[in-house]
Image (cartoon, helix red, strand yellow):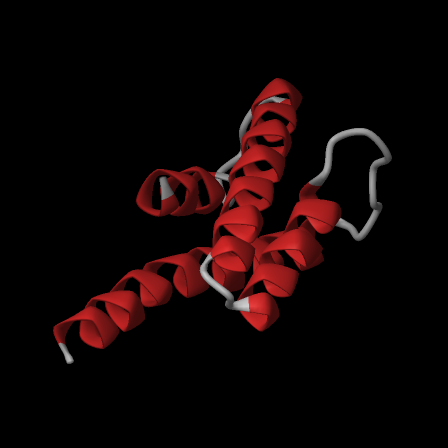
Length: 95
């Protein structure tokens, strides 16, 4: 899920139809809410709060107007963070 969402966020850097951005907002909201619940189940409240914060940021119901440039920066940072979290989780599980 994290890799697919990261790819969707990176594609947002291209000039896409508005419907694509709406789709990404719905998908992001769902994935981040799910990841937040999973982290709370695993007793990782801090990481869970980060995911819930991202779910609120990307939620599709009340649009947060930040401008395209700022959204592009957010998309890149969040995409890199998602990919980095895969490697961090992998190194923790190998210990």
